Length: 87
Image 1 (cartoon, helix red, strand yellow):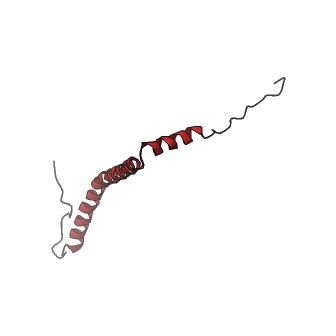
Image 2: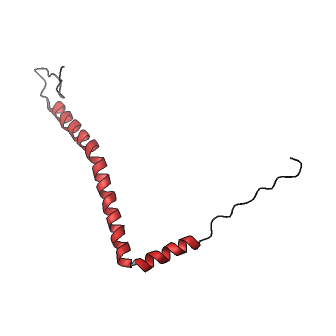
């Protein structure tokens, strides 16, 4: 199995500055792709904790009252479709 370096093979006259920059950019892109889901999950977890803390500060009565109001809200009316006789 052959492992190729990211920068490839340089010519003697090439300073290698652009290749080094692309190497760093590639490593940075891979790091972002690996860390993005973890950071997204951590932010969602913080939001959930914040919502739970807010609900705990409001008290159980407020949460129960809100739940009752949501249950008492009328649902969307379903229209009965009547077929014409003889169809």
